[in-house]
Amino acid sequence: MLVERGLRVMNVEVVGDAYAIAANYLRRSGAIADTLATNDRLLEIIVQMFQRGDFNRIRLANKAIARFEATSAAA
Image (cartoon, rainbow, N blue to C red):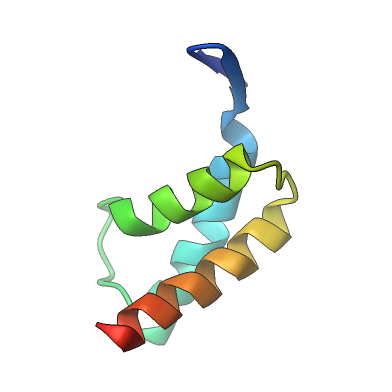
């Protein structure tokens, strides 16, 4: 599904799939709570990378996991 945001068109399926993959891993590892609520920080990381031109779901998920864990460890 394509959603227009301003002048940009965003493929919601790619972002959604990448989020699902990353969130599943992070829930299983205990990095985020096991709830149905969306983790805004993780979603923001994925959306930023998507807007920079990364459209591969697996790569988005892997990079988001690495960034999320790096920022969690630093905090």
